[in-house]
Length: 410
Ligand SMILES: *Cc1c(COP(=O)(O)O)cnc(C)c1O
Image (cartoon, rainbow, N blue to C red; front, side, top):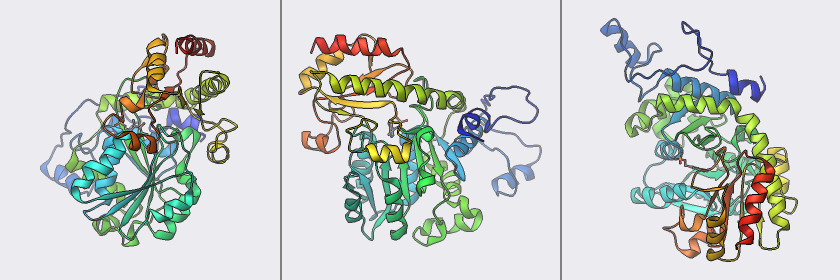
């Protein structure tokens, strides 16, 4: 089935409920008639739900739908995008290991990799995705995975996923792609050789700014019996291709506890139904706004992957079918001007979310990246004069008018 159809029908409830919409199974635990039955489920001898930290029917429907959309072998939904990234990291790393990550990624991920995980003797080496050759230099014999974002937030860089997948395969390590900004509508990284996809479903997938969530999808490309991950030996024996997800569900996520809530899974399922339609509109409006800003005399540079002059345009064509997504950034010269612009918008809201139906503007340097030095901020793609925009679904004229009026005040 095509993505538009999968987004609505994959994971559709079957069985006794005649509801057309996903049902919210708001139950903590699941009861069994006999002690033996529950013991069998615990021992993995039969299917069944136990306790919603380990699995829940509403969340399972979301996992099925996301696995279909990403064309993966399976999925685990989590409490947030950060919970998804944390569980992948804990599932693959032990102290002394390294991560090779692109430099322009989400601030929370940088903080996890460089601060929290550093306390457990994990080191992260960064590379610039514009130069795929550089990635090789960031990989050592201690590296356990490569991490990139399909469209970096807020750097707006587009990695050459097929080239990085070749590199990962040569070094026998998995390539992990955070596909939050491109969504499976623009790109399914597994198709280009990526091994694991993570999402913050809080963003475009939810689509309306109503719940926090995340997901991990195994694309089925990495052979977990490779020997690199000794912690996955038992899981490989038990679950074969599903080894990594089995390990996350039965060990890592069980222990860390970052499970998705059933009500939030329902909201994500609902968001997914309109994701293909919404992404089309987000891309259209963002392209129009990028073009408007590019021509505006008060605006310095504009970063949008589908702009003709963008250095990532070729990759955008090859990987995303020429669609640039719903995010863009632009420079106004200094922080004061960026603040004045943000204070002057009437329609666009000043908020840290993205992928919402509403247009949102943000000054990344003083918010998500506030704890980093000026130098680090520039490297991470969040210089002090930069405004990030998540272009919403409002009428194009209203968005452009709001920006024109606010730019007049700068
Ligand atoms: C927001 C975001 C995250 C973190 O997700 P949460 O759901 O907020 O925990 C991770 N990666 C990217 C690219 C994001 O935009």
